[in-house]
Amino acid sequence: MTNTPIRGGIRRDTWNVLVRELRPVVRDPFTLIFSLVQPLVFLGLFAPLLIGQSGMPVDQTLRWFVPGVIVMIVLFGTGAVGSNLQYEMMTGSHERTLVAPLARSSLLIGRALKEVAPIMAQALLIVLIALPFGFRFHPGGLAIGLVMLAVFSIGLGSLSYALALGTRDREWLFCGVQQTLIFPLLILSGMLLPLDEGPGWMRAVSTVNPVNWVVQAERALIQGEFWDPVVLWGWVAAGLLAVLGLAVGIRGMRRSN
Amino acid sequence: MTNEPIIDARSLSKRFSVNKQPVEAVTDLSFTVQPGELVAFLGPNGAGKSTSLRMLTTLIPPTSGSARVAGHDIRREPAAVRRNIGYVGQLNSGSFAQRVRDELISQGAFYGLGKSQARRRADELIESLDLAPFAKRSVQQLSGGQKLRLDVALGLMHAPPLLFLDEPSTGLDPQSRANLWQHIIDVRAQHGTTVFLTTHYLEEADRYAERVMVIDRGRMIADNTAERLKAELAGDALRLTFTSQGDAEAAASMVQRLAGRPVQTHQDHSLRLTAPDGARLLPTAVRELDAAGIRVDCATGVPPTLDDVFLSLTGRTLREADAPEESEAKIPMEGPVK
Ligand SMILES: Nc1ncnc2c1ncn2[C@@H]1O[C@H](COP(=O)(O)OP(=O)(O)O)[C@@H](O)[C@H]1O
Ligand SMILES: [Mg+2]
Image (cartoon, rainbow over all chains, first blue to last red; front, side, top):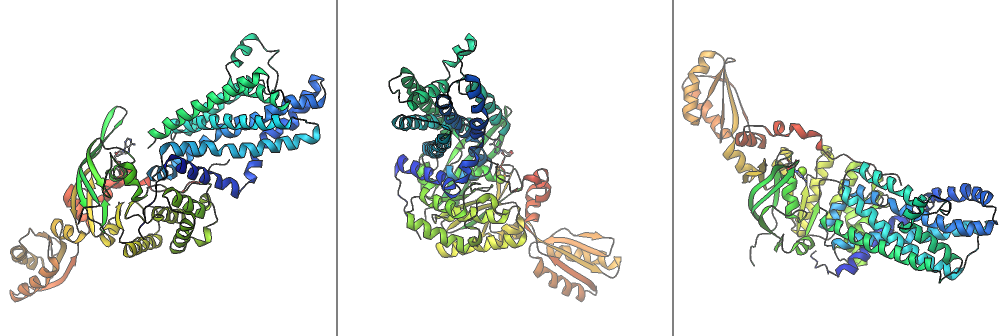
Protein backbone atom coordinates (compact mmCIF):
# COMPACT_ATOMS: atom_id res chain seq x y z
CA MET A 1 0.00 0.00 0.00
CA THR A 2 1.48 3.24 -1.06
CA ASN A 3 -0.21 6.51 -0.44
CA THR A 4 0.40 10.13 -1.12
CA PRO A 5 -0.98 11.97 1.87
CA ILE A 6 -2.42 15.31 0.97
CA ARG A 7 -1.11 18.27 2.81
CA GLY A 8 -3.90 20.61 3.70
CA GLY A 9 -2.07 23.37 5.45
CA ILE A 10 -2.34 24.78 8.92
CA ARG A 11 -6.14 24.85 9.04
CA ARG A 12 -6.48 21.20 8.33
CA ASP A 13 -3.67 20.30 10.74
CA THR A 14 -5.25 22.43 13.46
CA TRP A 15 -8.58 20.74 12.91
CA ASN A 16 -6.97 17.30 13.22
CA VAL A 17 -5.16 18.28 16.40
CA LEU A 18 -8.37 19.75 17.82
CA VAL A 19 -10.35 16.60 17.02
CA ARG A 20 -7.71 14.45 18.64
CA GLU A 21 -7.68 16.56 21.79
CA LEU A 22 -11.46 16.46 22.03
CA ARG A 23 -11.68 12.68 21.78
CA PRO A 24 -10.92 11.88 25.44
CA VAL A 25 -13.45 14.53 26.53
CA VAL A 26 -16.16 13.06 24.33
CA ARG A 27 -15.31 9.52 25.43
CA ASP A 28 -15.39 10.40 29.07
CA PRO A 29 -17.50 13.51 29.65
CA PHE A 30 -17.59 12.82 33.38
CA THR A 31 -14.05 14.13 33.69
CA LEU A 32 -15.62 17.55 33.06
CA ILE A 33 -17.75 17.20 36.14
CA PHE A 34 -14.88 16.03 38.29
CA SER A 35 -12.85 19.08 37.46
CA LEU A 36 -15.85 21.17 38.51
CA VAL A 37 -15.55 20.07 42.11
CA GLN A 38 -13.43 23.03 43.13
CA PRO A 39 -15.69 25.74 41.67
CA LEU A 40 -18.74 23.93 43.06
CA VAL A 41 -17.21 23.96 46.53
CA PHE A 42 -16.80 27.70 46.22
CA LEU A 43 -20.34 28.04 44.98
CA GLY A 44 -21.76 25.86 47.74
CA LEU A 45 -19.67 26.97 50.70
CA PHE A 46 -18.47 30.44 49.88
CA ALA A 47 -21.62 31.89 48.34
CA PRO A 48 -23.73 31.36 51.51
CA LEU A 49 -21.05 33.13 53.55
CA LEU A 50 -21.04 35.97 51.10
CA ILE A 51 -24.81 36.20 51.19
CA GLY A 52 -24.71 36.35 55.00
CA GLN A 53 -21.93 38.94 54.99
CA SER A 54 -23.19 41.31 52.33
CA GLY A 55 -26.71 41.50 53.63
CA MET A 56 -27.82 41.88 50.03
CA PRO A 57 -30.60 39.78 48.51
CA VAL A 58 -29.61 36.29 47.35
CA ASP A 59 -30.26 36.87 43.65
CA GLN A 60 -28.15 39.99 43.67
CA THR A 61 -25.26 38.26 45.44
CA LEU A 62 -25.40 35.35 43.01
CA ARG A 63 -25.39 37.72 40.07
CA TRP A 64 -22.21 39.10 41.50
CA PHE A 65 -20.64 35.78 42.47
CA VAL A 66 -21.54 33.33 39.66
CA PRO A 67 -19.64 35.21 36.92
CA GLY A 68 -16.56 34.99 39.17
CA VAL A 69 -16.99 31.24 39.57
CA ILE A 70 -17.26 30.86 35.80
CA VAL A 71 -13.98 32.69 35.32
CA MET A 72 -12.53 30.56 38.12
CA ILE A 73 -13.16 27.42 36.04
CA VAL A 74 -10.87 28.80 33.39
CA LEU A 75 -8.24 29.80 35.92
CA PHE A 76 -8.08 26.41 37.60
CA GLY A 77 -9.00 24.15 34.68
CA THR A 78 -7.42 25.75 31.65
CA GLY A 79 -4.52 27.16 33.63
CA ALA A 80 -3.38 23.62 34.40
CA VAL A 81 -3.72 22.01 30.95
CA GLY A 82 -0.03 22.50 30.25
CA SER A 83 0.66 19.59 32.57
CA ASN A 84 -0.96 17.26 30.02
CA LEU A 85 1.41 18.47 27.35
CA GLN A 86 4.29 18.22 29.78
CA TYR A 87 3.40 14.61 30.40
CA GLU A 88 3.24 13.99 26.65
CA MET A 89 6.69 15.52 26.38
CA MET A 90 8.06 13.14 29.00
CA THR A 91 6.68 10.14 27.18
CA GLY A 92 7.20 9.94 23.42
CA SER A 93 3.80 11.15 22.41
CA HIS A 94 4.71 14.79 21.83
CA GLU A 95 7.78 13.70 19.89
CA ARG A 96 5.62 11.54 17.64
CA THR A 97 3.49 14.52 16.69
CA LEU A 98 6.66 16.49 15.92
CA VAL A 99 7.72 13.84 13.40
CA ALA A 100 4.25 13.80 11.84
CA PRO A 101 3.74 16.17 8.90
CA LEU A 102 1.91 18.78 10.99
CA ALA A 103 2.60 22.48 11.15
CA ARG A 104 4.13 23.21 14.54
CA SER A 105 1.68 26.04 15.13
CA SER A 106 -1.27 23.69 14.66
CA LEU A 107 -0.07 21.62 17.60
CA LEU A 108 -0.57 24.66 19.80
CA ILE A 109 -3.60 26.29 18.20
CA GLY A 110 -5.52 23.01 18.06
CA ARG A 111 -4.88 22.39 21.73
CA ALA A 112 -5.78 25.94 22.72
CA LEU A 113 -9.04 25.83 20.76
CA LYS A 114 -9.97 22.56 22.39
CA GLU A 115 -10.08 24.33 25.76
CA VAL A 116 -13.17 26.19 24.64
CA ALA A 117 -15.36 23.09 24.60
CA PRO A 118 -15.02 21.95 28.21
CA ILE A 119 -15.19 25.54 29.45
CA MET A 120 -18.49 26.19 27.69
CA ALA A 121 -19.96 22.96 29.02
CA GLN A 122 -18.75 23.64 32.54
CA ALA A 123 -19.89 27.26 32.60
CA LEU A 124 -23.38 26.27 31.47
CA LEU A 125 -23.44 23.58 34.13
CA ILE A 126 -22.57 26.11 36.82
CA VAL A 127 -25.33 28.40 35.56
CA LEU A 128 -27.83 25.52 35.65
CA ILE A 129 -26.80 24.58 39.17
CA ALA A 130 -27.12 28.17 40.37
CA LEU A 131 -30.59 28.66 38.82
CA PRO A 132 -32.65 26.95 41.54
CA PHE A 133 -30.89 29.09 44.14
CA GLY A 134 -32.22 32.21 42.58
CA PHE A 135 -29.56 33.09 40.01
CA ARG A 136 -31.03 35.21 37.22
CA PHE A 137 -29.25 36.38 34.09
CA HIS A 138 -29.74 38.14 30.77
CA PRO A 139 -29.62 35.38 28.09
CA GLY A 140 -28.03 37.54 25.39
CA GLY A 141 -25.53 38.80 27.93
CA LEU A 142 -24.65 35.29 28.99
CA ALA A 143 -24.10 34.27 25.38
CA ILE A 144 -21.72 37.15 24.76
CA GLY A 145 -20.11 36.49 28.13
CA LEU A 146 -19.40 32.91 27.07
CA VAL A 147 -17.73 34.11 23.88
CA MET A 148 -15.49 36.35 25.95
CA LEU A 149 -14.79 33.43 28.27
CA ALA A 150 -13.81 31.33 25.23
CA VAL A 151 -11.31 33.97 24.10
CA PHE A 152 -9.96 34.20 27.63
CA SER A 153 -9.54 30.42 27.90
CA ILE A 154 -7.70 30.27 24.57
CA GLY A 155 -5.26 32.82 25.94
CA LEU A 156 -4.77 31.22 29.33
CA GLY A 157 -4.59 27.72 27.84
CA SER A 158 -1.91 28.85 25.38
CA LEU A 159 0.09 30.39 28.20
CA SER A 160 -0.18 27.18 30.20
CA TYR A 161 1.06 25.19 27.21
CA ALA A 162 3.84 27.71 26.68
CA LEU A 163 4.89 27.25 30.30
CA ALA A 164 4.96 23.48 29.82
CA LEU A 165 7.09 23.84 26.66
CA GLY A 166 9.43 26.16 28.49
CA THR A 167 9.85 24.04 31.60
CA ARG A 168 10.15 20.77 29.62
CA ASP A 169 10.68 17.85 31.97
CA ARG A 170 10.80 19.96 35.13
CA GLU A 171 7.35 19.19 36.45
CA TRP A 172 8.06 20.93 39.76
CA LEU A 173 8.88 24.14 37.94
CA PHE A 174 5.65 24.06 35.97
CA CYS A 175 3.56 23.41 39.07
CA GLY A 176 5.51 25.97 41.06
CA VAL A 177 5.02 28.78 38.58
CA GLN A 178 1.40 27.90 37.93
CA GLN A 179 0.49 27.66 41.62
CA THR A 180 2.39 30.83 42.45
CA LEU A 181 0.54 32.82 39.83
CA ILE A 182 -2.93 31.44 40.21
CA PHE A 183 -3.82 32.69 43.68
CA PRO A 184 -2.62 36.27 43.30
CA LEU A 185 -4.47 36.39 39.96
CA LEU A 186 -7.56 34.99 41.69
CA ILE A 187 -7.57 37.25 44.72
CA LEU A 188 -6.55 40.35 42.80
CA SER A 189 -9.42 39.85 40.39
CA GLY A 190 -12.07 40.49 43.03
CA MET A 191 -13.56 37.16 42.09
CA LEU A 192 -14.32 36.05 45.64
CA LEU A 193 -14.39 39.28 47.59
CA PRO A 194 -14.80 42.80 46.27
CA LEU A 195 -11.58 44.77 46.11
CA ASP A 196 -13.30 48.09 46.84
CA GLU A 197 -12.46 47.73 50.52
CA GLY A 198 -8.90 46.60 49.89
CA PRO A 199 -5.79 48.78 50.31
CA GLY A 200 -4.82 51.13 47.54
CA TRP A 201 -1.91 49.08 46.30
CA MET A 202 -4.16 46.06 45.81
CA ARG A 203 -6.59 48.07 43.78
CA ALA A 204 -3.69 49.45 41.76
CA VAL A 205 -2.31 45.99 41.00
CA SER A 206 -5.74 44.69 40.09
CA THR A 207 -6.08 47.27 37.35
CA VAL A 208 -3.33 45.48 35.42
CA ASN A 209 -4.73 42.04 36.16
CA PRO A 210 -6.54 40.90 33.03
CA VAL A 211 -8.57 38.42 35.08
CA ASN A 212 -10.07 41.33 37.00
CA TRP A 213 -11.34 42.95 33.80
CA VAL A 214 -12.77 39.73 32.48
CA VAL A 215 -14.60 39.14 35.77
CA GLN A 216 -16.03 42.65 35.80
CA ALA A 217 -17.06 42.40 32.17
CA GLU A 218 -18.77 39.06 32.78
CA ARG A 219 -20.72 40.59 35.69
CA ALA A 220 -21.90 43.45 33.54
CA LEU A 221 -22.83 41.19 30.63
CA ILE A 222 -24.83 38.78 32.75
CA GLN A 223 -27.00 41.69 33.85
CA GLY A 224 -27.40 42.76 30.24
CA GLU A 225 -25.29 45.90 30.65
CA PHE A 226 -23.71 45.57 27.21
CA TRP A 227 -22.52 49.15 27.02
CA ASP A 228 -20.77 49.37 30.35
CA PRO A 229 -17.14 50.41 29.65
CA VAL A 230 -15.84 47.44 31.70
CA VAL A 231 -17.19 45.18 28.93
CA LEU A 232 -14.88 46.87 26.50
CA TRP A 233 -11.99 46.46 28.92
CA GLY A 234 -12.90 42.81 29.32
CA TRP A 235 -12.61 42.35 25.56
CA VAL A 236 -9.29 44.15 25.52
CA ALA A 237 -7.94 42.00 28.37
CA ALA A 238 -9.19 38.69 26.94
CA GLY A 239 -8.07 39.62 23.42
CA LEU A 240 -4.60 40.71 24.46
CA LEU A 241 -4.17 37.60 26.55
CA ALA A 242 -5.19 35.42 23.61
CA VAL A 243 -2.82 37.16 21.22
CA LEU A 244 0.04 37.05 23.70
CA GLY A 245 -0.66 33.45 24.68
CA LEU A 246 -0.84 32.21 21.09
CA ALA A 247 2.31 34.12 20.12
CA VAL A 248 4.35 32.80 23.05
CA GLY A 249 2.90 29.31 22.72
CA ILE A 250 3.52 29.00 18.99
CA ARG A 251 7.04 30.23 19.47
CA GLY A 252 7.57 27.60 22.17
CA MET A 253 6.15 24.88 19.96
CA ARG A 254 8.38 25.87 17.02
CA ARG A 255 11.42 25.51 19.27
CA SER A 256 10.27 22.20 20.66
CA ASN A 257 12.23 19.10 19.78
CA MET B 1 15.93 7.68 -10.31
CA THR B 2 16.95 4.04 -10.29
CA ASN B 3 18.55 2.92 -7.08
CA GLU B 4 18.56 6.25 -5.38
CA PRO B 5 19.39 5.42 -1.79
CA ILE B 6 16.50 5.92 0.62
CA ILE B 7 18.94 7.24 3.20
CA ASP B 8 22.06 9.10 2.20
CA ALA B 9 23.90 10.53 5.20
CA ARG B 10 26.98 12.64 4.65
CA SER B 11 29.25 13.55 7.52
CA LEU B 12 26.40 14.02 9.95
CA SER B 13 27.63 15.36 13.26
CA LYS B 14 25.85 16.51 16.37
CA ARG B 15 27.40 18.35 19.25
CA PHE B 16 25.40 19.06 22.39
CA SER B 17 26.46 21.39 25.06
CA VAL B 18 25.92 20.12 28.60
CA ASN B 19 26.81 22.57 31.36
CA LYS B 20 28.86 24.52 28.81
CA GLN B 21 30.88 21.36 28.04
CA PRO B 22 30.64 20.13 24.45
CA VAL B 23 29.39 16.55 24.06
CA GLU B 24 30.14 15.01 20.69
CA ALA B 25 27.09 12.79 20.41
CA VAL B 26 27.60 11.85 16.75
CA THR B 27 30.70 12.45 14.67
CA ASP B 28 31.08 12.29 10.91
CA LEU B 29 28.42 9.73 10.19
CA SER B 30 28.24 8.74 6.50
CA PHE B 31 26.35 5.85 4.97
CA THR B 32 23.69 4.96 2.44
CA VAL B 33 20.75 2.62 2.74
CA GLN B 34 19.00 1.18 -0.32
CA PRO B 35 15.23 0.79 -0.49
CA GLY B 36 14.07 -2.44 1.12
CA GLU B 37 17.06 -2.97 3.38
CA LEU B 38 16.78 -4.02 7.00
CA VAL B 39 19.53 -2.26 8.90
CA ALA B 40 20.40 -2.42 12.58
CA PHE B 41 22.31 0.29 14.31
CA LEU B 42 24.11 -1.52 17.10
CA GLY B 43 25.89 0.18 19.95
CA PRO B 44 26.00 0.55 23.71
CA ASN B 45 23.92 3.09 25.60
CA GLY B 46 25.11 6.60 24.90
CA ALA B 47 26.76 5.60 21.61
CA GLY B 48 24.73 8.14 19.64
CA LYS B 49 22.05 5.91 18.14
CA SER B 50 19.04 8.00 19.16
CA THR B 51 20.77 11.23 18.23
CA SER B 52 21.48 9.86 14.74
CA LEU B 53 17.84 8.82 14.35
CA ARG B 54 16.60 12.14 15.63
CA MET B 55 18.66 13.92 12.99
CA LEU B 56 17.47 11.62 10.21
CA THR B 57 13.83 12.08 11.26
CA THR B 58 14.18 15.91 11.34
CA LEU B 59 13.64 16.17 15.10
CA ILE B 60 16.96 17.92 15.64
CA PRO B 61 19.17 19.70 13.13
CA PRO B 62 22.69 18.36 12.67
CA THR B 63 25.56 20.56 13.83
CA SER B 64 27.22 19.84 10.51
CA GLY B 65 26.81 17.52 7.57
CA SER B 66 23.72 16.71 5.58
CA ALA B 67 21.39 13.88 4.73
CA ARG B 68 18.73 12.98 2.24
CA VAL B 69 15.98 10.77 3.59
CA ALA B 70 13.27 9.33 1.33
CA GLY B 71 14.49 11.61 -1.44
CA HIS B 72 14.42 14.88 0.52
CA ASP B 73 16.95 16.97 2.36
CA ILE B 74 16.46 16.81 6.13
CA ARG B 75 17.30 20.48 6.58
CA ARG B 76 15.66 22.09 3.58
CA GLU B 77 12.60 19.88 3.19
CA PRO B 78 11.78 18.52 6.65
CA ALA B 79 8.03 18.45 5.89
CA ALA B 80 8.57 16.22 2.85
CA VAL B 81 10.82 13.91 4.85
CA ARG B 82 8.22 13.64 7.63
CA ARG B 83 5.48 12.71 5.19
CA ASN B 84 7.48 9.77 3.92
CA ILE B 85 8.82 8.20 7.06
CA GLY B 86 7.45 6.42 10.08
CA TYR B 87 9.13 6.81 13.43
CA VAL B 88 8.82 4.72 16.55
CA GLY B 89 10.76 6.54 19.21
CA GLN B 90 12.46 5.20 22.27
CA LEU B 91 9.59 6.13 24.61
CA ASN B 92 5.93 5.21 24.37
CA SER B 93 4.18 7.43 21.91
CA GLY B 94 0.49 7.02 22.67
CA SER B 95 -0.95 9.83 24.75
CA PHE B 96 -2.07 8.57 28.17
CA ALA B 97 -5.69 9.73 28.02
CA GLN B 98 -6.37 8.59 24.46
CA ARG B 99 -8.00 5.33 23.54
CA VAL B 100 -5.93 2.99 21.40
CA ARG B 101 -8.15 3.06 18.33
CA ASP B 102 -8.73 6.82 18.61
CA GLU B 103 -5.02 7.47 18.73
CA LEU B 104 -4.48 5.39 15.59
CA ILE B 105 -7.25 7.21 13.74
CA SER B 106 -5.83 10.60 14.77
CA GLN B 107 -2.44 9.50 13.54
CA GLY B 108 -4.01 8.57 10.21
CA ALA B 109 -5.60 12.01 9.96
CA PHE B 110 -2.24 13.65 10.70
CA TYR B 111 -0.84 11.88 7.66
CA GLY B 112 -3.73 12.86 5.44
CA LEU B 113 -5.71 9.63 5.37
CA GLY B 114 -9.43 10.05 4.83
CA LYS B 115 -11.85 9.07 7.59
CA SER B 116 -12.85 5.67 6.28
CA GLN B 117 -9.34 4.91 5.12
CA ALA B 118 -7.98 5.75 8.58
CA ARG B 119 -10.58 3.55 10.29
CA ARG B 120 -9.89 0.64 7.98
CA ARG B 121 -6.17 0.94 8.45
CA ALA B 122 -6.49 1.27 12.23
CA ASP B 123 -8.59 -1.89 12.39
CA GLU B 124 -6.10 -3.75 10.20
CA LEU B 125 -3.24 -2.83 12.51
CA ILE B 126 -5.26 -3.53 15.66
CA GLU B 127 -5.86 -6.97 14.24
CA SER B 128 -2.32 -7.70 13.10
CA LEU B 129 -0.66 -6.37 16.27
CA ASP B 130 -3.08 -8.19 18.59
CA LEU B 131 -4.48 -4.99 20.03
CA ALA B 132 -8.14 -5.92 19.57
CA PRO B 133 -8.91 -6.61 23.26
CA PHE B 134 -7.53 -3.19 24.24
CA ALA B 135 -8.70 -1.08 21.32
CA LYS B 136 -11.17 0.79 23.52
CA ARG B 137 -8.87 1.14 26.48
CA SER B 138 -6.95 4.28 27.14
CA VAL B 139 -3.20 4.16 26.70
CA GLN B 140 -2.54 4.51 30.42
CA GLN B 141 -4.33 1.23 31.00
CA LEU B 142 -1.99 -0.77 28.76
CA SER B 143 0.94 -2.91 29.85
CA GLY B 144 4.45 -2.12 28.62
CA GLY B 145 4.28 -4.68 25.82
CA GLN B 146 0.85 -3.51 24.72
CA LYS B 147 2.00 0.11 24.64
CA LEU B 148 4.90 -0.90 22.47
CA ARG B 149 2.66 -2.69 20.01
CA LEU B 150 0.61 0.48 19.82
CA ASP B 151 3.80 2.45 19.17
CA VAL B 152 4.61 0.18 16.26
CA ALA B 153 1.04 0.40 14.95
CA LEU B 154 1.23 4.20 15.11
CA GLY B 155 4.47 4.14 13.17
CA LEU B 156 2.89 1.95 10.48
CA MET B 157 -0.43 3.78 10.23
CA HIS B 158 0.42 5.57 6.98
CA ALA B 159 2.36 2.62 5.54
CA PRO B 160 5.60 4.59 5.24
CA PRO B 161 8.18 3.38 2.75
CA LEU B 162 10.82 3.91 5.44
CA LEU B 163 10.40 3.04 9.09
CA PHE B 164 12.73 4.11 11.89
CA LEU B 165 12.55 2.30 15.20
CA ASP B 166 14.60 3.35 18.21
CA GLU B 167 15.35 0.40 20.47
CA PRO B 168 11.92 -1.09 19.93
CA SER B 169 12.61 -4.22 21.93
CA THR B 170 14.26 -2.72 25.01
CA GLY B 171 12.59 -3.93 28.18
CA LEU B 172 10.51 -6.60 26.47
CA ASP B 173 10.48 -10.22 27.53
CA PRO B 174 11.91 -12.68 24.98
CA GLN B 175 8.48 -13.83 23.82
CA SER B 176 7.24 -10.29 23.12
CA ARG B 177 10.51 -9.49 21.47
CA ALA B 178 10.18 -12.44 19.12
CA ASN B 179 6.59 -11.37 18.34
CA LEU B 180 7.66 -7.82 17.64
CA TRP B 181 10.25 -9.06 15.22
CA GLN B 182 7.73 -11.24 13.48
CA HIS B 183 5.61 -8.12 12.92
CA ILE B 184 8.52 -6.15 11.56
CA ILE B 185 9.44 -8.98 9.23
CA ASP B 186 5.84 -9.38 8.06
CA VAL B 187 5.43 -5.69 7.34
CA ARG B 188 8.58 -5.76 5.33
CA ALA B 189 7.54 -8.79 3.37
CA GLN B 190 4.16 -7.25 2.61
CA HIS B 191 5.11 -3.69 1.77
CA GLY B 192 8.82 -3.80 1.01
CA THR B 193 9.32 -1.28 3.80
CA THR B 194 12.86 -0.18 4.49
CA VAL B 195 13.55 -0.72 8.18
CA PHE B 196 16.22 1.16 10.08
CA LEU B 197 16.36 0.33 13.75
CA THR B 198 18.66 0.71 16.68
CA THR B 199 19.38 -1.88 19.30
CA HIS B 200 21.85 -2.66 21.99
CA TYR B 201 20.98 -6.33 21.92
CA LEU B 202 23.59 -8.22 19.95
CA GLU B 203 21.54 -11.37 19.57
CA GLU B 204 18.85 -9.33 17.94
CA ALA B 205 21.10 -7.60 15.42
CA ASP B 206 22.77 -10.90 14.71
CA ARG B 207 19.60 -12.85 14.18
CA TYR B 208 17.38 -10.45 12.26
CA ALA B 209 19.29 -7.64 10.60
CA GLU B 210 20.66 -8.09 7.14
CA ARG B 211 23.13 -5.36 7.72
CA VAL B 212 24.67 -4.19 10.97
CA MET B 213 26.27 -0.83 11.57
CA VAL B 214 28.25 -0.72 14.76
CA ILE B 215 28.39 2.64 16.47
CA ASP B 216 30.48 3.52 19.48
CA ARG B 217 31.15 6.89 21.06
CA GLY B 218 29.39 8.68 18.24
CA ARG B 219 31.37 7.08 15.44
CA MET B 220 30.46 4.31 13.07
CA ILE B 221 33.15 1.67 13.41
CA ALA B 222 31.82 -1.13 11.21
CA ASP B 223 29.17 -1.67 8.56
CA ASN B 224 28.50 -5.07 7.05
CA THR B 225 26.39 -8.19 7.29
CA ALA B 226 26.62 -9.88 10.66
CA GLU B 227 28.18 -12.89 8.95
CA ARG B 228 30.96 -10.88 7.34
CA LEU B 229 31.62 -8.85 10.45
CA LYS B 230 32.04 -11.99 12.46
CA ALA B 231 34.17 -13.70 9.86
CA GLU B 232 36.38 -10.69 9.29
CA LEU B 233 36.65 -9.21 12.73
CA ALA B 234 36.34 -12.24 14.96
CA GLY B 235 36.72 -15.97 14.48
CA ASP B 236 35.51 -19.24 15.88
CA ALA B 237 36.92 -19.94 19.33
CA LEU B 238 38.62 -23.35 19.04
CA ARG B 239 39.73 -25.57 21.83
CA LEU B 240 41.61 -28.89 21.49
CA THR B 241 42.20 -31.02 24.56
CA PHE B 242 44.79 -33.80 24.78
CA THR B 243 45.43 -36.62 27.22
CA SER B 244 48.78 -35.20 28.37
CA GLN B 245 50.49 -31.84 28.62
CA GLY B 246 53.28 -33.25 26.44
CA ASP B 247 50.84 -33.96 23.60
CA ALA B 248 49.37 -30.51 23.95
CA GLU B 249 52.75 -28.87 23.63
CA ALA B 250 53.74 -31.06 20.70
CA ALA B 251 50.51 -30.22 18.93
CA ALA B 252 50.83 -26.46 19.45
CA SER B 253 53.31 -25.72 16.68
CA MET B 254 51.46 -27.91 14.18
CA VAL B 255 48.13 -26.23 14.88
CA GLN B 256 49.74 -22.82 14.72
CA ARG B 257 51.11 -23.60 11.27
CA LEU B 258 47.76 -24.93 10.02
CA ALA B 259 45.78 -21.98 11.35
CA GLY B 260 48.29 -19.26 10.65
CA ARG B 261 47.26 -17.84 14.03
CA PRO B 262 48.81 -17.68 17.47
CA VAL B 263 47.93 -20.59 19.74
CA GLN B 264 47.80 -20.56 23.55
CA THR B 265 48.75 -23.64 25.53
CA HIS B 266 46.88 -24.09 28.81
CA GLN B 267 47.72 -26.20 31.84
CA ASP B 268 44.65 -28.39 31.43
CA HIS B 269 46.35 -30.08 28.43
CA SER B 270 44.53 -27.85 26.01
CA LEU B 271 45.24 -25.47 23.14
CA ARG B 272 43.09 -22.44 22.41
CA LEU B 273 42.93 -20.14 19.42
CA THR B 274 40.50 -18.09 17.39
CA ALA B 275 40.41 -18.65 13.65
CA PRO B 276 38.15 -17.12 11.00
CA ASP B 277 37.29 -20.42 9.36
CA GLY B 278 37.47 -22.53 12.47
CA ALA B 279 34.71 -24.97 11.61
CA ARG B 280 36.76 -26.12 8.63
CA LEU B 281 40.08 -25.98 10.40
CA LEU B 282 38.99 -28.20 13.26
CA PRO B 283 38.57 -31.54 11.37
CA THR B 284 41.72 -30.87 9.34
CA ALA B 285 43.72 -30.34 12.51
CA VAL B 286 42.32 -33.48 14.11
CA ARG B 287 43.23 -35.58 11.04
CA GLU B 288 46.75 -34.20 10.70
CA LEU B 289 47.46 -34.57 14.42
CA ASP B 290 46.19 -38.13 14.29
CA ALA B 291 48.45 -38.86 11.36
CA ALA B 292 51.37 -37.47 13.37
CA GLY B 293 50.47 -39.84 16.22
CA ILE B 294 48.98 -37.19 18.54
CA ARG B 295 45.54 -38.17 19.76
CA VAL B 296 43.01 -35.38 20.22
CA ASP B 297 40.82 -36.14 23.22
CA CYS B 298 38.20 -33.48 22.73
CA ALA B 299 37.62 -30.68 20.20
CA THR B 300 35.17 -27.77 20.38
CA GLY B 301 34.53 -24.80 18.15
CA VAL B 302 32.33 -21.89 19.24
CA PRO B 303 31.16 -19.53 16.50
CA PRO B 304 31.76 -15.84 17.18
CA THR B 305 29.09 -13.41 18.32
CA LEU B 306 28.79 -9.74 17.54
CA ASP B 307 30.12 -9.16 21.02
CA ASP B 308 33.42 -10.61 19.86
CA VAL B 309 33.25 -8.22 16.92
CA PHE B 310 32.64 -5.30 19.24
CA LEU B 311 35.47 -6.46 21.48
CA SER B 312 37.89 -6.72 18.62
CA LEU B 313 36.85 -3.25 17.37
CA THR B 314 36.87 -1.39 20.67
CA GLY B 315 38.71 -3.51 23.22
CA ARG B 316 35.53 -3.55 25.35
CA THR B 317 32.63 -5.93 25.34
CA LEU B 318 29.26 -4.42 24.54
CA ARG B 319 28.04 -5.28 28.03
CA GLU B 320 30.94 -3.45 29.65
CA ALA B 321 30.33 -0.44 27.44
CA ASP B 322 26.65 -0.59 28.34
CA ALA B 323 27.02 -0.92 32.06
CA PRO B 324 26.81 2.71 33.22
CA GLU B 325 23.37 3.38 31.83
CA GLU B 326 21.73 -0.02 32.05
CA SER B 327 18.78 1.55 33.88
CA GLU B 328 17.82 3.54 30.79
CA ALA B 329 15.37 0.84 29.72
CA LYS B 330 11.78 1.71 28.89
CA ILE B 331 9.86 2.12 32.08
CA PRO B 332 6.11 2.14 31.66
CA MET B 333 4.74 5.20 33.39
CA GLU B 334 1.31 5.90 34.71
CA GLY B 335 -0.67 8.91 33.60
CA PRO B 336 -1.16 11.94 35.83
CA VAL B 337 -4.38 12.23 37.74
CA LYS B 338 -6.56 14.98 36.39
N1 LIG C 1 19.41 16.56 24.22
C1 LIG C 1 20.64 16.26 24.64
N2 LIG C 1 21.38 17.16 25.32
C2 LIG C 1 22.61 16.87 25.73
N3 LIG C 1 23.24 15.70 25.54
C3 LIG C 1 22.58 14.76 24.86
C4 LIG C 1 21.24 14.97 24.39
N4 LIG C 1 20.83 13.85 23.76
C5 LIG C 1 21.85 12.98 23.85
N5 LIG C 1 22.90 13.50 24.51
C6 LIG C 1 24.20 12.84 24.75
O1 LIG C 1 24.68 12.37 23.52
C7 LIG C 1 25.25 11.08 23.65
C8 LIG C 1 24.53 10.11 22.74
O2 LIG C 1 23.22 9.90 23.23
P1 LIG C 1 22.15 9.01 22.49
O3 LIG C 1 22.11 9.38 21.05
O4 LIG C 1 20.89 9.11 23.25
O5 LIG C 1 22.76 7.55 22.65
P2 LIG C 1 22.07 6.11 22.45
O6 LIG C 1 20.74 6.32 21.83
O7 LIG C 1 23.01 5.36 21.59
O8 LIG C 1 21.96 5.50 23.80
C9 LIG C 1 25.15 10.74 25.13
O9 LIG C 1 26.38 11.08 25.71
C10 LIG C 1 24.04 11.61 25.62
O10 LIG C 1 24.22 11.91 26.98
MG1 LIG D 1 18.91 5.83 22.61
